[in-house]
Image (cartoon, rainbow, N blue to C red; front, side, top):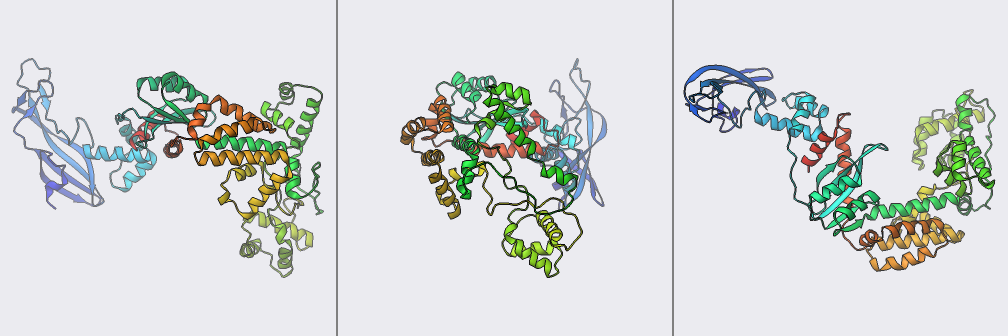
Length: 539
């Protein structure tokens, strides 16, 4: 390879010597231009005052670090009165003044920092033989000028969390060009409205159901068409169904279990052993919630207001409202207590224990061949309890064996998701579950029918079906559906646009996921300026 190939093209340098050591290549070079220009008065000069050596890192070659030692000259300025009597010749597009890295290495470090951040980028740079510190990479990122994008015709708006539940920002996406055009430091209506006023010309605003974004679009872009995101509309419907299933827990449980509705009966542990402290705590886990539920119901029956109940029992208002509207104490972890699905294999496990197989890991491998795919810890606990029951071991089980129904009842959230699932994606068992719910309770059946009709019309973009659905839902006897309709009426124009417009926030959510990756890779140093630079430059 010719020696000049080690230098940047058109560098104006001549290689004078080359030293190669293990892991390092040192290139000595000098300038050859007959004169240089004063950076202040732009007067050329050929009067050399002195020379000195500048040392800078350059791109690696074949896994070796490269150090560039350039002999540069100082010149005397020929202009009388110039404040620079002596100046150093410049190396444009090669080495910036006072820089310790060539321009092309600086650009490489900047690209690494934009892609990976500080810590991860530094590790990669070391592996590529262009080592630098995480702080240097972040400084390179901060010097990047923000790209200037044209005002989008179709704008996607969504929020993202700097710290969930505490501080949020806003991401703006050009849906036609499919790229992020700006990050805003908060999700306030005034901030988005100010951006829209400074960028007139937006014709369509796709957003979630947040009122702040809707208000900003009405104030700053009144001529723009607002489109409610279809996923968020389905999410609102799912939340309404979940509240309904929570309120009718006992009815749904009776329908799916084929047992008459009634108060839940606590299961008693069939084994006799002395439980430890953790076992007692686990066994008594749901008891305080049940007691609180009964206390809330009692105070409400006595005429105490919901807010007074919340203050008295130190509960959140929404928790009190949920307890009052529910028929039974809500269970947010159905089927989580005790072994999951292992009762169906109890006889097989007992037989293997009688045959002399005492290793839970071996039993789990055999269970996997029979179709069980539960966690190893569940199998170990279950085998331990059966050993005690069969008198095969003196080991004390970690928790009591609790009787379970033959089939675990799905949670309200899972049932709500099942209703909104496309019919073609449901299994035969799931379809039978919905059919039993549809015919087993009039209120639940009506809610399922309305939810399926709404989801089908939204997916097929049947805008003409929305009016009929709204009339049916407003006349419904299901309170949660009527509440949902009231919310849709408040944002009716954007909801109608969602049934006919091809735009949605799907790709915005994808950009938010990529933003989260960049934020979490910042190792606690993803300030807004760094995050904004990385997200905007990466698109």
